[in-house]
Image (cartoon, rainbow, N blue to C red):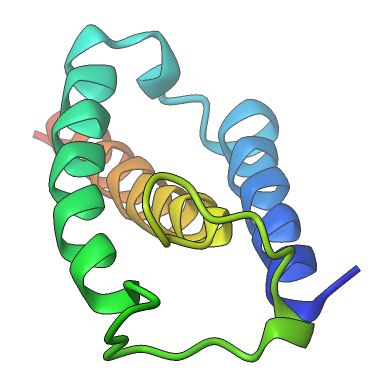
Length: 105
């Protein structure tokens, strides 16, 4: 499995495990979370599509490091998984720290 693909899968699984087994914030059950992910996805498609378009790329990926699946347009699908994991982990920590602060008050 290509490195970027493998690390993306590991990142997704790690973030899900952190939520399910450790933080337990309930974020995945929140409509606000999924709406925010849809908004992020919308803008990611436009920006990432522009950055990775094969006709005139700004960001170039080593074909040996990605799965080769590009959707929509020319966006490597790994970018969506990596972005999801990075943003979701940030939100999970933010929600958890906010709960701690409210409990301490």
